[in-house]
Image (cartoon, rainbow, N blue to C red; front, side, top):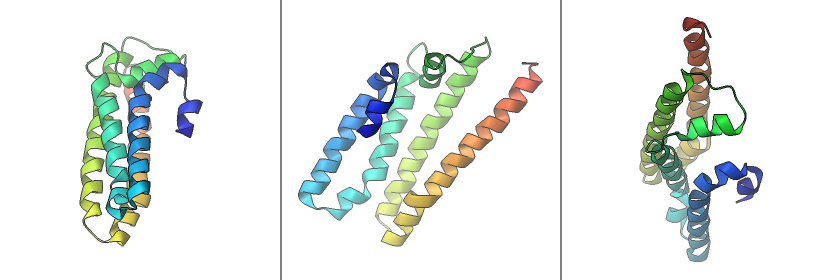
Length: 144
């Protein structure tokens, strides 16, 4: 919920439903004291992020294009289709990450902690680095 106050007003309408859902889930987990609910938290975070990214693909401007424009980034004619595909890649990533996080809920707490506390963040970092490297080659190939 603290993050909501830090994001730009144009981005809030996309994140508000996710943040409210996660806050309600956290409250339910705290009230019930259920370890299973707490372990499912990463699953819900990934499902929420997947939903935000996937839902934006139905709009004229997908989420990453809107974010780029709201931050004043230069948008050329190659950017919209590129950012639409990248938005879809992130949606698929979050769906797969939710599935793996769900599987870890049913394994040992050690496996859950290593995956959800380390491995998933490493994979996110690798996806970000891969996208930056790909974007560099993509722009160079198109003479941008």
